[in-house]
Length: 271
Image (cartoon, rainbow, N blue to C red; front, side):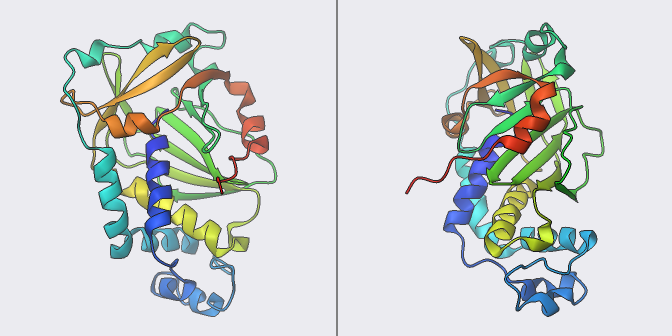
């Protein structure tokens, strides 16, 4: 599952519950006046440069309105369940399992089998997809202590969110706390995005921003030829709501990452 999946779902839930998207006019104070000029355009980021695009996402993320929507969803996902003794030594050593395969840890990824939010996780933190024709936009800097895990997920056709994190190993558990680096990869320039694409991505970024102070851990368990990630608080209490959102993962060669990003689209929402 990696660190990103539950938070993308939290962002999607927040989007469904939130009010009308912020307009470019509301971003004017952080984008040097260009937003006001673009406010009549159905493309909220039209005319923005990279710095102004990052400022726009920061402004939306800081919205008190979004805080009121996202915070309860995150609290629900992190509602603790029963305590599990020796949880840190349960499951499998996922690094040893993947590292024993041809190509080693850096040569293999975990592919989440959920069609609604297709994603892959690189537990070496070294994967870099080759995406000619895509626009790349960094909106959050990499963690100051370095990166040892990356995830790539798509929640809308042609738009991918790439996150960079730093896990700490505790036995078989991978524990996470702190800021995530975030980059966006898009088939079309962000300045050409419509309101729906802009707001959906902004919700996702805001959700990741709000988990920076929270700590949780994952333990991988083998299920046939796949792996299930089980979630815990650092004191060993389960996180059943996060586990309920998880899908099984299978190993995928890292050499397939670029094609996976180029060719994969999320499943259409159910009517």
